[in-house]
Amino acid sequence: MTKDIGPGVERLYNTWRVRKRMPTDVRKHFNNKLVFSKSLETTNYVITVSRAEPIMQERKELIAAARKKYKGEVVDFGESVKAAKARMKSFNDGYQIIAAAAHDLNYRQDELAPVQRAEKLAVIGQAARKMTPILKYLEDWLSETRYTKAGEDDARNYFKKRFVKVFKYWETIDQNELKAYVRGRQDGSDGDRAWSDRTCEKNLNLVKQFWNWMLDNDHVECPNLIDAARLMKRKANTKTNRSETNADANLPYSIEECGAFVDAAKKDGYNMLPELIVLGMYTGCRIEELCALKLEDVGPDYFAIQDGKTEASQRRLPVHSAIKQMVERLMQDSKNGYLLSGLSSKTRYNYRSAAISKKLGYLKKSMGFSDRKQTFHSLKATLITRLMNVEADSTLSKKLVGHKIQDLTWGGYAGDADWDKKLEIQVCYLPKTQT
Image 1 (cartoon, helix red, strand yellow):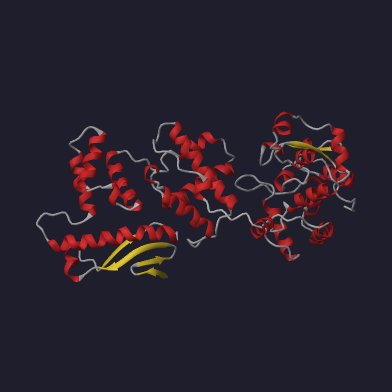
Image 2 (cartoon, one colour):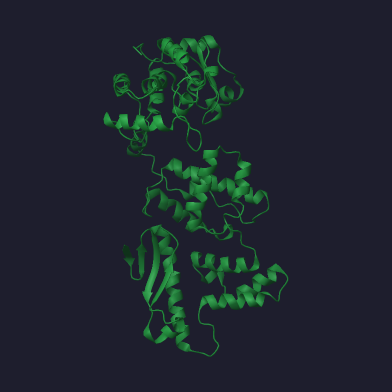
């Protein structure tokens, strides 16, 4: 299906294109084509508008050139490119090549729109071998990033499936088009689900890191244009906007909701689901941290979290007295060396939480909880809320739940808290309940 946004500009499925009929008197100059059609290679509405105008102008120029019918005269941009490349063969110096190409292609930077300038520069640069495709060194960069396998795949997919659909070469990235792309993704004007500010910052950071690596390794010379503060559209710091942000995701459960959650899981009967929820309530750990917990990482009165999302995730935290019996039972019943036994890890990244996470989602929806506002991570929010209510020490609380401490004194110089202090604060977590 197609959708129009203006004369000659339409969307075919997800990609916009320019499509207009060719006048009858000039069709023989264009292989008798009835229609002039050119993909804009974007799904973004804002970029479509900026790209369509120069292409419409190109069509007019082609028709005008064809009507002149001068013998041997080049009548379209493609023929100009061929002529320029043929002339380049007589030059050895790269800068002479660029100068010749610019002359042959009638390149005038101050007379062209940003998108049209980028397109002509791309042709000149390819011919002179001065343009660097975005994906040319992607795998080299990824091999040095030391991302997790999942993080590496996320970065690879972003560049291959999204970024290069709009930007083909580092040297032709334009500040205005970059801003239009980012803001189009923020408001979802290209038809896809809009990015949150956090997702936008994450993806911009990927491009920034890759670009810096390209500069450090002398693969490109063009300056890094990634500046999230300038590119992103920011909401005004108003009470309404702050309320919307705070109500976005991972809201804490009430104590009553936690109890109902556990009861529903027991009734459902899915393997290890009630135990997983209880562990989340009393530790604030991420779901994969708990599912990956091995028996060797569980002591008489502690859990040793060996791996997590950040460096701060590696920590030792007490086993709450309310769940000690359950933990002892899980250790005795384990058949594969994990505290939560029987979970499958047959996924691409060997995540043991994949299947039970889906089951948790189904259970949560059946209880009427929101898909994004209440999650397993909300159990961490519940725990932090309880710690706040009893006026627990904020620095110690951050260490217990695995949050990074930004303060230079406590985050940079202070070591781990004394075990007695951790045991003290453990009493404040949640009211003792039957588990």
